[in-house]
Length: 264
Image (tube, rainbow, N blue to C red; front, top):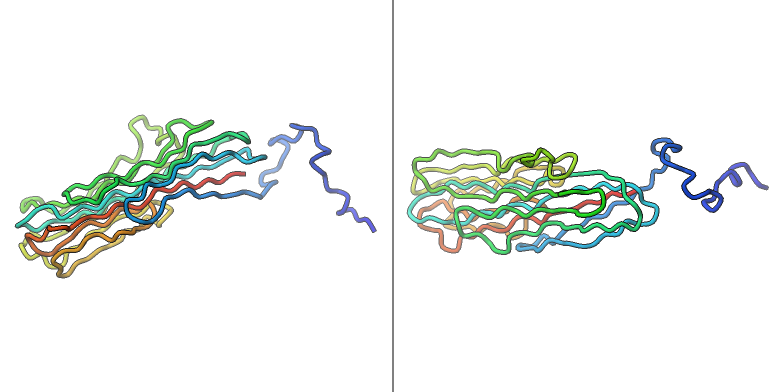
């Protein structure tokens, strides 16, 4: 026996193309949406991941969320003096929601990292993730600031904001909302035997919680940074608690950038 619920449904074939516009639909009339992630590997010296994404049939809106890659960790760079170690900064975040058209193609790039580990005092910054295509202009998320080591006996320990929170033009790198985490913490001792050293690397906003990863040495001749760090997080630096132990003390590369696509 037929019921009202069995015949009240409307088939797409009975509708004239373009007759049902956004203005005729209540908010949340359609609840289906899809999410796609683009990212590189978690290993060191990752090249990231770039691809061409085509808007599926029926999709009219898309939200892009970007995270740049984390900065590289510093190396052990000076003999005969203790060093203060500043951890690397996590990659920046940026997002934008746009109208789109099915069949449009977007160039997507989740940032890789600088292709070598660091032995110098100042490590390389992370690379930017970006999306190019219809209704976007200069849309990207920059990478985090690289870690550094300071061997001065006259410079006090300090911390600072790593990179500006908006672009010079005030356009937020082509997005609607962008932000970064604090550069890694800076700490150390001035003595030749630097008992208990600490450094902190920050993560990517909303991805790793933006939390600091604290690395502490009580007494260690030489320690390289860990090879694998979370996505968009700052790399770990080479550390020591002694003078003259910088041989082969390398910092590792930061975490790969990420792109999240939400479309409906």
